[in-house]
Image 1 (cartoon, rainbow, N blue to C red):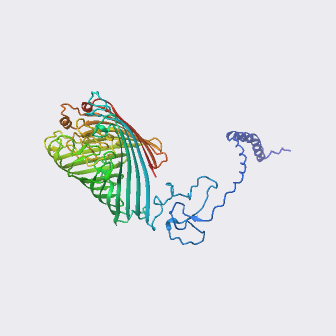
Image 2: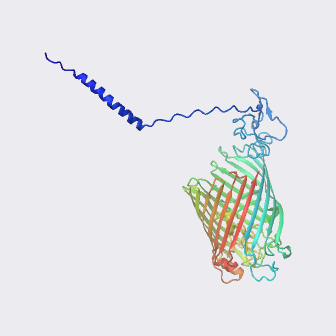
Image 3: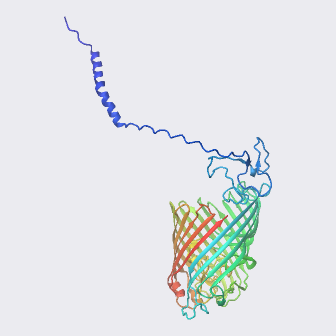
Length: 605
């Protein structure tokens, strides 16, 4: 009998079972090795104990800040509908986001003395009706400054027997200003320009100067070598009225009259002062176009504080017109055209320390009148990644009798400046150039040395620069080679009280610097300047000195600015600077290195 063959299907099944038995454990082991086993989850945290019971929160509603001094309800009963005639003092229910926490983020309750939260004293609530607000500001400015200047030995020397032409130039200055600003205005200033404003800012000053030589603090050597003085001034006292709205973007026309702050160009090269006057100003095209028409009648300044006198006429007229356009050609770049006029009628005036400042005590010291006009083009902003600031001014006018030239002069002088900068991360690298023309022929009837009206420039280091911060007197005269807070070697008796002088040597200043923010609270500004006379004929004539070089010196400075609260309520500034003389400065003053160090503290409430 023939033997039956097994069906092929059974062989396939047997082979499949055999492979599964052998390969499956191997695959499982490989998968376990490739994917590590997860750790078991941690045990759940223990339930915290219940919070301690807190006192119940009153079921009332009140304004979060200090909203009034006297009268009126401070709280409203929690009703479904309560009429509230005062939209500014709508109450908020008491609320604690974090029970028992020291600080609450929302609905912080302010006090009348609290400058960081809502308060009637800083204009958060109206003081009259719904649209009239009041702002009260207190500020303290403290300055401590030590310096070494070239100081000539007085006729009555502080040290008998000293034979040097220049004596000890070390000086110490202390200055304290207390400012009280009272501001009353009408309008919702947080949403649109003010309708009208009244402002008064009296300043109370105390200053002390200690020197090593006589004839510095007073013309009378019997007054010694130190001086303590005080002064009260009004730096602001004006009213401002909105005359018209000229567009739906809150562009306006305003009229301001009284003692007011005005800087006529971006960097303060030509005019920056607190003066009584009238200013008509406005803007257009969503504030991209701005214009000013202003007239000022200058006040005399107090000699030792630099503040305004109490309404003592300076006999000088200043008229200014300028037009500024933002986003001119390039977004972020602003251009300005300006016209200035200064008419100084001339007078005779002694400063508070007995020195003659008008006319200047140089040459024949004859009274004279100066009329000069300025045409200027300035710009400030950035073009792509590069920052740019520039200025050019042409001065044309007439000086009836210049004391250095000892004759009348036609004025034709120029000034130019440019700064380029580049930002990289937290640093700003910059380089600058400043030029003021000098007079090569002081007796030819044309004055070619540039002079400003009342400058206070923020350029090539600004107040940190030794050359700009210090006034350096020209020996044998009562005029300064350069005045305090000015860049111009204009040989004026005083920037504050003296007359303009367009017979001067002029200057070149080349600058490199860097500005940076070390932390959000601390920033620095470091600069190195090389200074050079444009022309030397004028100092040669005044000093009767045959040889005076062109090179003035190297000015190097660094300034630190610290804001511990990240706002401007507390500002501390430290400045250090040195000045190394070169040939031109050595020919006049000698080769001694000069320096300054100052510390300033501003507290604002």
